[in-house]
Image (cartoon, rainbow, N blue to C red; front, side, top):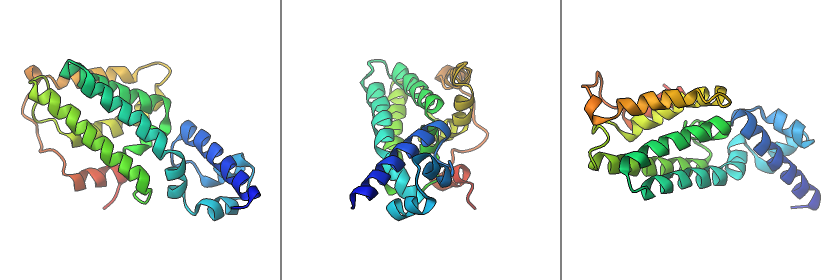
Length: 204
């Protein structure tokens, strides 16, 4: 890659990181190019697609933050505190980083590295849930898919109320309802993976 192309790629990565962090992964690419001071065509010539840019800019950062949340939860001596802390931490990340709120929705299936982060995050969340259920502190009918749907629904609330912390109330209500002592029969079975994907992406 020529020196001028390398400089443009660096400027685009920096602009994308700023705008993804400010507004999420669906920010118009023309705005990223404008902030970087390059043409829209230059962005496509260097990266080819939104998904490639997302993989380049977001995947590693998302992996580091979400992996840390799971490690902290699984290292906690108390399984309930580990589970509750995990939910709070992921919601906090969604509040301060709109891009993290978009990561778990799987709206960009062609961003292969990001999809790998999603898969690893779902597996880690399942491990946090199963640990709490084995300890008898989390209702047994709660699934990883249930958690993902809650996090996806919570993301815009967390983002909009980041300054006030109102999102913490919603998380507290959820957690109170997940204690085994408060459990009641549910009106529907848990979503399948296919159903969850269609719900999150708006697909057919």
